[in-house]
Length: 283
Image 1 (cartoon, rainbow, N blue to C red):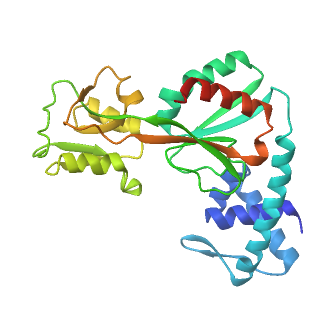
Image 2 (cartoon, helix red, strand yellow; image 1 turned 180 degrees about the vertical axis):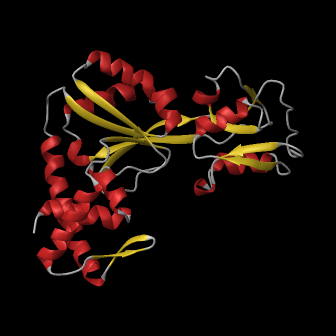
Image 3 (tube, one colour; image 1 turned 45 degrees about the vertical axis):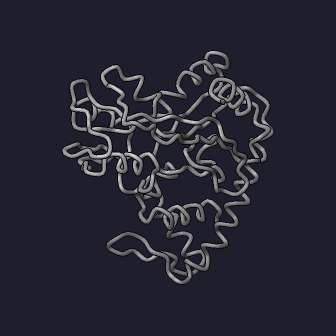
C-alpha cells in the first residue's frame, strides 16, 4: 500500500468524482482511477462505490477514511514544520481572500512586497470557499469572520465600513419604506450577513432582484442601474460610476481577520508579508 494512493482515495472521497479529485491533486482522471483501483486491490476491499451522483464510501471505505485522515495530518504537519523553518526570502507563498478584498485592498500591499522581495512568488486565490490552512491549501488567509480551525494563529486586522450605492440618476429610495426599490444582495448561501439584514430593515418594502456571491458583480449590476447594493467602502468608493447615498443610518461595520497555521509562524516570507500588511492596513 502506497501513501500516495491513500491521498488519491481521500481526494475522491472528498470531491465525489474522479475529475474533481484529479483537479485537486493536479493529476489526470485515468491516473486517479488506476491508483484507486491499485489501493483497493492491495487492501482486498472495495472502498468507494460509484453511483449516478458520484462516488460514495462503502462500509470498508468509511473505516479506512479516519486512518487515512490521521496519516494525512501527520504528513502535513511534517511538511508545515519543515516549511515553517525556512528563512530564505524566496519560494512560493499562497494567499487567499475574497475577490473584492484582493483587488481593492491587498493588491497595493502585494505589489509593494513583490518589488521589495522579487524572489518570492505570491499566489493569490480568490474564492467564496474557505481554503484549509492545515492542509496547506493556503499559507495566509483573510476572512470576514473569525477563524475556527484548530492550530490557526489569527488576529483582527481592520474594521471594514460599508456604504449604500446606486448608479448616478437612479431614484433614491425612501428610508423606512423602499417601495419600488430593487436590491442587489449576496446569494442565499451567505444568509444572515448583517449588512443585508440591515438593508432589508431600512427598506422593508424593497424587493430582492439579484443575488451573487461576488461583490464585484453586484457593483457591476449597480453601475448598470439594476438596483441598490451595500458594498464595502474600498470597493464602492473606488468605482467612480457609483453614488453613495444616505439612508439615515450607517450600515454595520465588519471585522476583517488574518490567520495562518501556527507551524508556519517561523516562515520568513510569511512574516515579512504579514508585517507589511499589518503596517499598511491595521487600525
